[in-house]
Image (tube, rainbow, N blue to C red; front, side, top):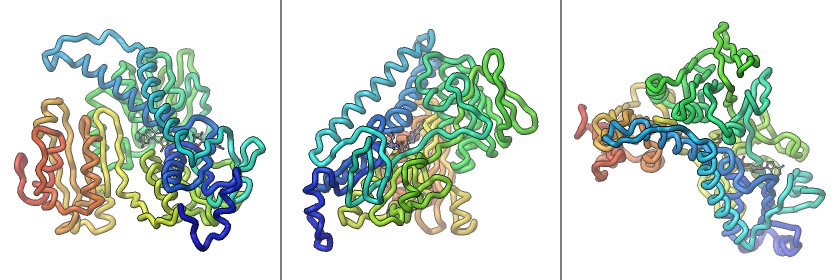
Amino acid sequence: MPPRSSDATWELSVSEPNDFDVVILGGGSGGYATALRAAQLDLKVALVEKGKLGGTCLHNGCIPTKALLHAAEVADQTRESEQFGVKAELVGIDMAGVNAYKDGVISRLYKGLQGLVGGSKNITLVSGAGKLVAPNTVEVDGKRYTGRNVVLASGSYAKSLPGLEVDGERVITSDHALTLDRVPSSAIVLGGGVIGVEFASVWKSFGVDVTIIEALPRLVAAEDEESSKALERAFRKRKINFKVGKPFEKVEKTEKGVKVTIAGGDTVEAELLLVAVGRGPNTANLGYEEQGVKLDRGYVLTDERLRTGVPNVYAVGDIVPGLQLAHRGFQQGIFVAEEIAGKNPAVIDEAGIPRVTYSEPELASVGLTEAKAKEKYGADKVKTYNYNLGGNGKSQILKTTGFIKLVGLEDGPVLGVHMVGARVGELVGEAQLITNWEAYPSEVAQLVHAHPTQNEALGEAHLALAGKPLHAHA
Ligand SMILES: Cc1cc2nc3c(=O)[nH]c(=O)nc-3n(C[C@H](O)[C@H](O)[C@H](O)COP(=O)(O)OP(=O)(O)OC[C@H]3O[C@@H](n4cnc5c(N)ncnc54)[C@H](O)[C@@H]3O)c2cc1C
């Protein structure tokens, strides 16, 4: 970055080996994205990481879960192969083999990331646990790293509930579930959000008897109600049990596993209990509050430009209230690096961030749900269209069911896209261009979608919302 005329000390400050333009605390999605973009902009970066570069997403989150979900899909396809005229038999799940496949994916990506960070002359990777000891200084093992700017990116941890002790054996979190060396015979998943639903889906495909317990009235309650209902129908068909609307009361150890009691006295027994009740911000004892950073229930409060209120201290990723997603962290990292470099980047629109639940079936969405759109614009201003995947050739070929639901403004742009079905996560890229560029249904209807693809269903839904359905009723 060229020195800013207003910053007379800039050149001096970087000539000190221990002085940086940016010191980043945490090398997960948010932290390493900040580092990579800042380095591209010729800023001198110190990236402090106490564990493994890549953080939760690469080692304990997105990537390992999606590898398990892919192995689950292979198991389902083998089990159901006869429907396609292919004779195959599912003999069993070899967890050592599944874990080797999953770990291979992680290690290739980890090597690539280490290469990217290590290959940058502008990034100094500092191994160890850091603490904010002054607004511009992070201390690691007694050594101080000072920066013109500091970016807090310390991520999140799996939360538990009062009275629920995680022992890593029978009561586990997603961290433990990702390294299980066996397929349990039965499991209870506490929490029907994205993480809980994904594990329930994997385990059912591996032959586990699964029950989800969710206090809210429906599974994946942050999604459009129709998507939740479709997922629940599909899970019922797959014989994944779930109990919604009643909170957890207690867990007891039994001879063979655990017994969970929910409000009202209902009990469920299983070999193990996965606690998937959300992720808390990892901000305790890191010096944040002492240096004046404002926290709310542990989350770092920022403005829309991700400034904490302490001059030149920013925060990115899961510690900032909002969607806890890796791609949000990446984008926030890019944003903050550009902000520091004086590039005045556009503020990130949280509603425009795509969301995918990678269960079978998948849920994918972007923009407003029908309920939120009606709340914002009034019920009479909002129109919806639900295109059934039954009319989509590729979905029929895959033997998947589901829909694409559009939420649009009367005589206005598309406000939200909500999709359910196998592989619909791959369609969210187009859906997010539509909503983020505020396209009108008639504009999308003009674009040609390849036949036969599932993508075509997005085109069909927009044709219908524009009043000229092709393979659908008006
Ligand atoms: C099971 C699971 C599945 C998920 N699946 C998806 C998915 O499919 N798609 C998606 O978008 N998101 C997914 N997520 C969420 C995603 O992993 C997070 O949103 C993302 O990792 C957040 O990035 P972050 O940089 O804020 O934090 P993290 O990735 O948690 O990184 C924080 C880093 O800071 C380090 N750190 C913490 N304290 C210190 C300290 N004092 N000193 C030095 N280093 C420190 C940690 O070691 C860690 O590496 C999933 C999460 C889980 C748990």
